[in-house]
Length: 559
Image 1: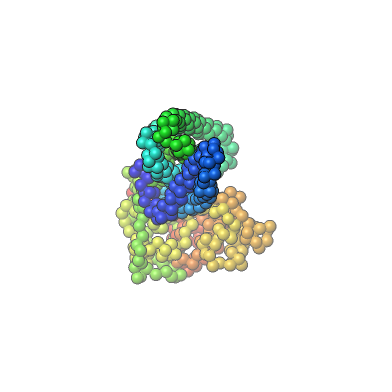
Image 2: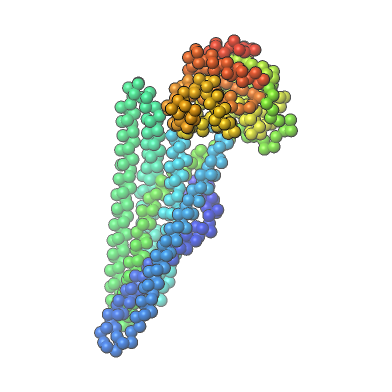
């Protein structure tokens, strides 16, 4: 159960509300049992009182009648407020869990998260966190309230008969401890497999949808669809096993409840016939057993989800236990100031290799950019240009060497200052599921529509406006699925041109553009960077004519 400890610690924040929820559930349970018990006593006592005129005249039916109405009202009110309090507590718990997970996830860089597929991360932090709400609603609260209810009933029953109390104790032990333990023994593994299979099914569906075009073009769509079908069948098999186990556990509780009732009726009849116990009291105790059996029936089924909860917690913890490889200082060095003036970049003896590899992708690299200088680094795809960009932006740390901006090491900048010092366009540009305006304002929230439309016109993207007019409410879809690769890249460039940063870093800015659009876009970039320091990583020659210096990759780090 140690995998649940990080999440159980978060429960402290909602402990008063959870305690109130448990109390209301306990009150509702006692009210329901009392309603059955008082009704049983009332009906039996009324029947006996009606046998003679004398007992009928002296029988007080107002008090038990008030007890029945009071129990009914209490049960209804307690049940209503219990649902409100418990569900509100659950939502708050999920909020704390999600916020806590995000706070631990946010410092992790892409280098740390690159081993996790996008669909897998989505499943962990949506489906798995949702699964954790079962821990309180279906396990903690029901088991605590049922245990308290059983204890209260046993204490009450023993005042009338120790033998009947003992039978109830045996029944409660079997229903709360033994049968749930057996269900967990045979159900925790299928429960874990269900959680894993849901993850695989969701991941395969996400991959299928996001890569549908490529799958169809390459003729792999039927095979991938068969994989989804296979994952679905496996999920149904595990769910069928759990449904069978659920039926068996419900049958076991029902049979055990029936046997307990038979024992209670048999012993009660002996006590009543011998004059030790009044008949109405015997009816009351028997109906108490029926009321408690209804509270016990869901417990074994609840134990089935424990395996699923544990596996979800394990998968979330696997990500949360990753250590951030980048840490930023909290307080900036006084000389680390943001300015729109160009800044210098000095890279000395920089070396880096990917985790788990022996060869260096960057080996003793040296580069110096003067303020306002425009420099291009050329090299074939995969030589390490994008890795250099990651090190400059502190997406990762070098193994050795130093990067300085304005004579200050980059690791002395706060994250906020560093991000505002650089306008960066990586190779992979993410488009969010929103409007064209939303995706542009990410770079500069203060830009108005006139500025955005002028910029789009400058980059030959004005036709993306809604209905071809000056309307930026065009929805461009998740990951920009309605955009071409060149359009997506130009939106990335537009974001750079909206930022007032002294350093501009571009990774393959003209990739996917035709020659005419490329020339127009490059002129816009050069015009924007007239008083800024520009570093371009490229393997295309068109932009080189605008550069002050051009460095082949091999020149920067000779063998």
